[in-house]
Amino acid sequence: MEQAYVFVACGTKEHITTLEFSLRALRRRTERNIIIVTDESRNEVKINTREQIINIPVPKKYSDHQAAIILKTSLYNILPKGNLYAYLDTDVVAIGKNPDGIFEEFIGPIRFAADHCRSRKFSPYAFNCGCLEKWGKDRKKLEEALEQYDKNRKIKDDKLIKASKELLAHFSHLKKRPSKKLQTAARYFLSPRTFKLNEQFYFDKKKRTWQSTKYNQVIMYEVPVRKISRATGLRYSRWKQTWVNKQGEDIWKDECSHLAEHIKGKFSIEIKENNWQHWNGGVFLFSDEIRGFLESWEN
Image (cartoon, rainbow, N blue to C red; front, side, top):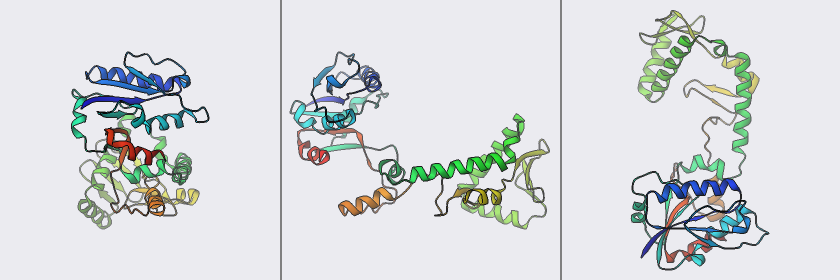
């Protein structure tokens, strides 16, 4: 069984340029055949390559994006039989020494690569649930309120800014260690007016400022969360150290469950793993057995 790579591309110059870049990177690292499937009548510019091109006209009633999907899901009718193929989206670039090792990963009838993110992170981008727009509005309101009320925006001294970043890094470290974080919180509540975080930083409870022992100056002001909450309708979770909306959602997390809920409602398939690693349709291996799968995908 011969092994070959296949790309599908048609449309704007940007898509063709991206394809040509990926082709050059792959050709430097492989001697396998590379096939490009396209509708040349749709391309703004000619594909500049010595690789094999298969031209398949797609009805003009379809957009370029739809045409690319049609070609992608019709590969079983387009490509020569009896081969093992690695399909790559045009923006997939070979950078390793042995890209041909991908063919060793084949499990019939089709094998996909794992996506770069998990399903909950992919959900708001894959499903038109409105979460991205909602979070965007929340972030805009927060940014406007911070610009108005956050005194930290007025600190311009580079050495103080550097010290504040070191303090934030310490907070980030504590966030990953719940037991240490709990101990630090207990020390804070039991301390007098001045809370000593460590040898570098201390907090003035009356002035609500963080200071550096090295500079003996304010390096960070406590953000006035109450004023910002009243202005935005958001709430600051001190334990999680993040802003949440009225539904209790972290406005920076970029995750939702709507895709999983839609899949369950439409296909009666429940995704039980909360952080499921889904497939990526931009990289997959297939052989002649793929016909039934791609027909289902196309429909």
